[in-house]
Image (cartoon, rainbow, N blue to C red; front, side):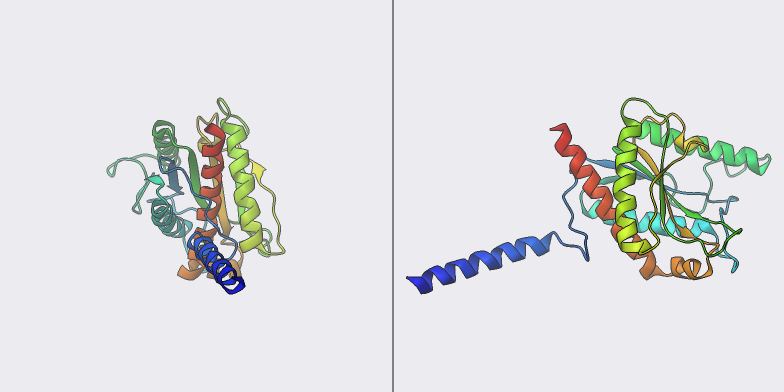
Length: 243
């Protein structure tokens, strides 16, 4: 009888262990299960004539932004999340034959991105960027921003998503270089938002070491794994609250 009970307990423990690891996706990244009807807009910052920040070695922000956004799209879709991309190629969101000052085209581009986000009715919009601070090239680390003003509970939800993502980035990317999520309202994407919206600055191109890492596929995938975990956790919590 004792042997049968011991064997039964062993089987139960094995089944529980298998069940646990099926939801495991690397160190500290248990996926909580986003609602299968969830929708996320991914905005790869800059593009086309607008290269964004640039490293001392000539690496353009726009290319890394797009690479990270595409990888994140694939991972979120594996979790059943519908993903809308503001851009999928190295082009700005303006007509190819558009003319005018670069500033004018960039403003039009930002308004089109905002239009896509507003029309999507998404649960979350995530804009992927890279930072730069040439005044002090020792500055490094991933930073998350949320809007100060918005409609309904969009700011509250944005801040909640930003806090969760910043926490995970601190733990798995930033290490001892801990950062706090910050409010931002000086860009079109973050003004009077209608859905939860955040900007994720994945690192500093002005920091030589971090710029080198950001170019590597393995480091981009590490960032994507953290973002996927955080986004799915947020979507899962949001679904539970709405039930």
